[in-house]
Amino acid sequence: MTITFTLKGKFIVLLLGICFSMMLFNTNNFYNIKVYGHFFTADETATFVAILDQLQTELKLVLANLAANNVSLAQNHASKAATLLSPKIWVEIAEDNPGLASDLRNAVIRLQNVSSSSESQLNSVSELVNELNKRLEEDAMVRIAQLPPSSSNLIEALKSLASIFGGNNQELDQETKLQALAFANVIDSVLTSYGKAYGIGFDMTNMSNMAMIGNNSNPSSMVRSSPVTESNSGANNMNMNMSSMNISSNNMTEHDGEMNMGYSLVNVSEYQSAHALATKAFEVFNAKLKHTTMSNNKNVTDYVTSLENGLTQLNDSIAKKASPLDVMMIVHTQIHPNLLEAFNLQLRK
Image (tube, rainbow, N blue to C red; front, top):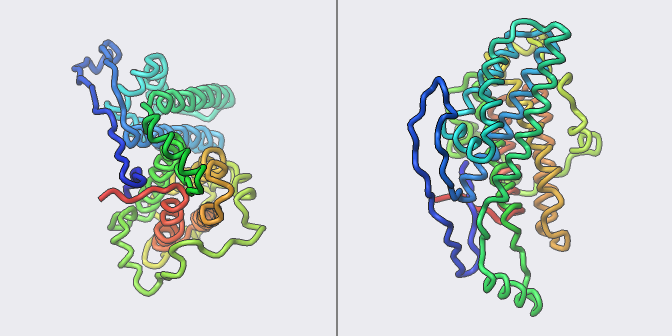
């Protein structure tokens, strides 16, 4: 599901074009390249921020699996982190912070080759992962700060006048919308990993595939689903730590391998990624989205509340290893619609 900005009234925001020159580089010495200035669009930035969120998640899973004495799964997640660092992402990180790009390159190679879970190794990896994730978070903030203004002073003045004369100004600042777009990308990555975990044969991020669910669909749950009970609140969900995620394959019960509405769990590392990314999405929601909408707008508040409930159900369902179709239903009928409404987004045509 691809989401982009919506435009209010007849005002059209013209985003700066991309000014970027591709450079050839020696793979043995990647950073002997010249990086030129690049004016990124909001959609590009949202994708970039979402990839950094996924990188942080995979690096944490390397550490968590190593702590659980599962070197093989730790290596799997290090390899997934390396895959996320495509040449394009390498260059974009290097443009903001060449030192971070170089350190990431060396770190993923080192983590893919980790061979033991000794105490000294674990302490070393813990220090490395924590430091990298802190720097990745800082790089995301740098990228967001580089965005050009989304509207002119004239538009801002007209919006202010509309507010003075009784208009209902529901415009959100560009950073909030960008964070909402990045959040949507992380949710898509949850679906992608969960689909791989169960070896399904279709794209879970494609809403048109919901027809496969058949009679399980419930149109009435499309927006503003019923609140969950207090015992399943988002606050409780956020208290979940890595040890509750069945990190080690040795902890997988016989029931976990059974058929689940026609699908069986076939890839533990992808399941871990889906579970950790759903948790990451909740963290992003609570830290960057939950309190940024207009509190005096009841409709928006209701959508945000329903979005939170959907996130809680998503995390609970993944923790219980629910059917991929059930997980897909939660995202497409409870999370996406309420996200669109709460943050004034729309599907890209």
